[in-house]
Length: 433
Image (cartoon, rainbow, N blue to C red):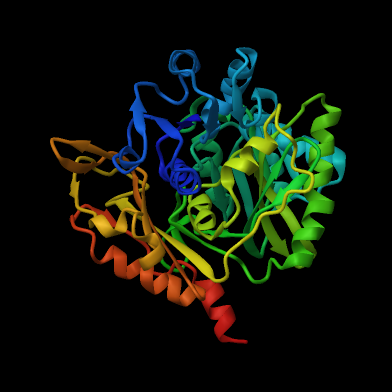
């Protein structure tokens, strides 16, 4: 079987790694731009969001199955185009990807379906948005409605911060067309949890809950980022919690999409805030999380390809399928370029020991997923803000974290920085029991 992975970040490396572990006999391709993925697959010259070129690659290479990782090609209609050409693909069409590509659409759908979420308003001009922010009080969240690479949500603790955030969207246009519509919503208090489920449009197959670390600095301080690390599972997101989330959040949302005429298949990913009144949806994503995916797949014992094929149009469906998980925990630490998420330099040389590249995972419990790297003249160089996702499993999150940081200490190069407290909430929680 020939499989194309669209994307070349840490999430896509993790998907490729798991697919290759389950089915090393298959032929794997990926959209070029990741030094780590080159050891498992052949790069092809195509940008993930270039629908025409990717479609041509699938045709010319006679690809059997395409797994679309990032949100941008989903929103651009890549899955639709491939299916129109009779090619199997994993991921929703552009209409379903609106759940992530338009926060305004997602909020309105949740409001109509009674899905618990924050009080909100959707605005196209600054004055009305500012008036609503004042109505909510000093604390609110300002969000660019469109895709902004995980950086379009600004948490505001004062009126001045809200005014500054609205200027970023409406005046300075820091998020471009993504802020043509702006969502202003109440600031929810609690602990965040990411919950992912595969769906064929009817059945829902939940994964383990995970927790992302969005802030740049230890102690959840600093600017929001695309994610500085993650761990799984989350003990407070137990079986009863997941069952409730499926009934009260996932099922009504899926039914709402169907009522809109949208046959959604792929990944439904809810970012949840655990408030005193129960879980509330912060955001919906239409793809695997990054870096949550990297913290989940090393724990997955089920055949990933089997699940992806079953969830995709033309597959057998997910009814009767279950996800099997290994015991223990997994922690992923993001090694980022110094300066990230603000201005940062690329082109720094890094050196990842061979035994951390995934082949020795069964012995070491450690694998490094590449995110922003390229190989040039025999050296691995940094190309992005998030560079490596150093991932480890252990009997508990404490052991997994120790292994991940021990691996980080062995990676050469002085152009990287990382948080030192990934998983701290869960580790503290388990210590207090």
